[in-house]
Amino acid sequence: MMPRLTLTFDNGPWPGVTESVLDVLAERDVLATFFVVGEQLAKPGGRALAERARAGGHWIGNHTMTHSVPFGDQPEQAYLEEEITGTQKLLRGLAHPDRLFRPFGRGGVLDERLLSQPAVDLLTDGDYTMVLWNCVPRDWEDPKGWPDRVIEELDHTEHVVAVLHDLPTGAMEQLGTFIDRVLLDRVEITQELPDSCVPMRRGELIGSLDGLVRVS
Image (cartoon, rainbow, N blue to C red; front, top):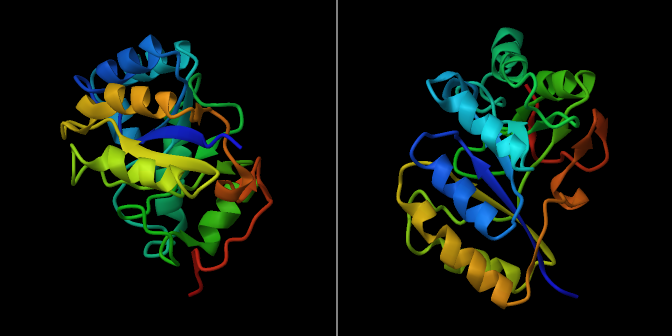
């Protein structure tokens, strides 16, 4: 079976970087999902970039307001409302209808600090779709070498959901070459999200959250 790759971009939009990412994707007819940070969206030029992404067929998701403290470490309701609900309000007119949400994982770590039970309750009650990941090539640390780690993951994972970042690290300068390489390797780049990385769809738990929720 042909390997599948879903590209996701976190922590933007970032003027001066997100534009070039959108150009590269458009040139190759590749669709992706952008998980935006509320504070970035609210900065000058942020919403225009998200609007351009949505107009290009990309999906827009919620990646918290401040991207600062994992929910397992800060389960207070006021914090959750600001981080999740506050960002969703900023996304009005942009958000995917399934209310895609990606929690802050401190560099992609999937452990009990990721979520709290109050966070899970809020996401359930709000009919959110929680999108996790199975590949974090740490492009922010290795702007030139990250593509090799995604390629390696594709060698033994049927459907890779890669977390990249449209940030000014220089990493996105490799994006076009990387996409060309995986397409030559007959990898299918898809916007679809596999159930293995989506434990909650439209507020309904369809997968396990074992080890991802801190019990206080």
